[in-house]
Length: 145
Image 1 (cartoon, helix red, strand yellow):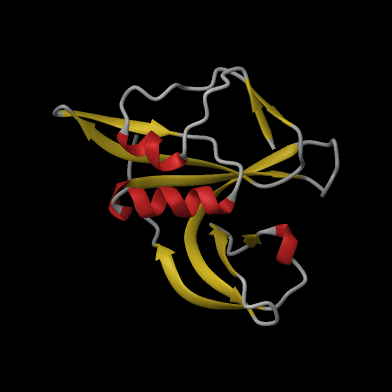
Image 2 (cartoon, rainbow, N blue to C red; image 1 turned 90 degrees about the horizontal axis):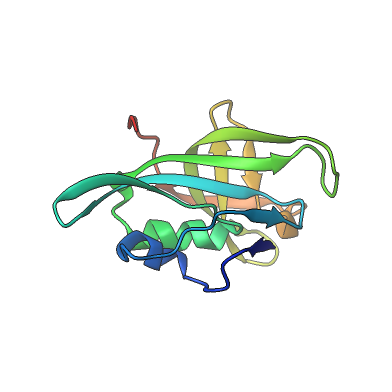
């Protein structure tokens, strides 16, 4: 869960299309969970710019990918705790592939994120379940900010 200093909540898709969206100035991270930091290219009123967001759930990443042209997503980084529930240091990696997957037992749909070294990250709710990768949702892109 993320707590912010601004009480207005915006759906992630609105950040991709609404130029007057408010931006958080401070975020308090209450849970040791994966956080995502996407960077995408946007054009508003003939002005080209890069937009960024801090997302606390894989479904928000999916909503963002559904809301923007997938070629516009330049970079996706993942912040992760060193150990589940730990107060230790956090790490950051660059995600190179995003997969849509289905749990073999629950048939729940989720996203799997693969970093530069091939390590995969997924929703910890289903961490013990075997997954079937269905399709690659986002391929790696070279994009300089």
